[in-house]
Length: 120
Picture 1: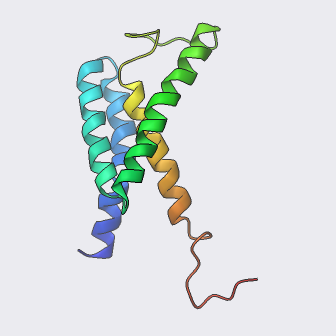
Picture 2: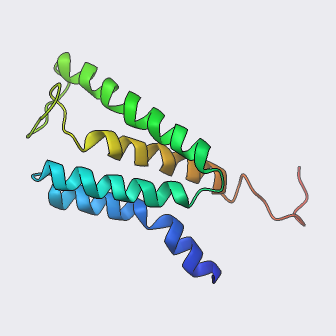
Picture 3: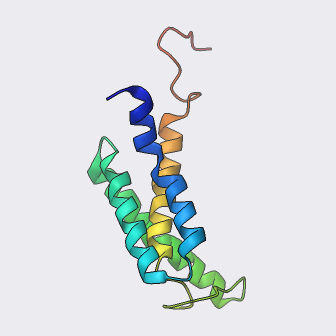
């Protein structure tokens, strides 16, 4: 697979998740299913799928819990809450965000300099 195609394949779930969330937030079940599909796609692009799944589960669990606590104390509200004043699609979106943060930290050019670059 050409490098540009591989990069596009790995990076596509992030902008697709944001776009689908912006367009479909009023259809929570559809959006949840689409975000779960994007999550599976994203997990399969990681070299260590087991660790990617663990990271996704961590984000999907603790992201919504954090938001539910903040909402309970009045920080903000959701337009169409379904469960504990949060939306159904929030868990897969937080899982995708955790994977995005991991991918950015693992592939950042400053963290992975070329082999011929001297280290300071």
